[in-house]
Length: 87
Image: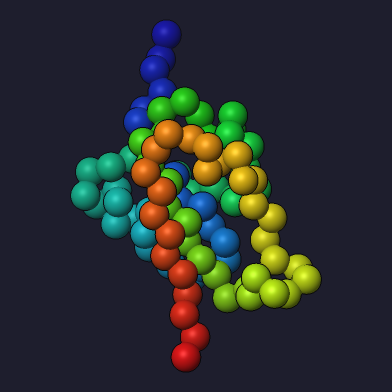
């Protein structure tokens, strides 16, 4: 029986950096996966050890923002958010 690998999940809110973040995690020796922010908790698996929210250009005030599954916040893992800032 194969065991699921421990991983860090990068939730991609449309950021141009989501793939770069996942690649850098892998270069440091961590297993990482990119998922949609609307992903179910079950689809993330049981061996999630951390979550990175990779922000995008959409404003929270716009009508068509990416859907987010708020149940992800109930997981007992560290969560780090990085956002795209336009000045």
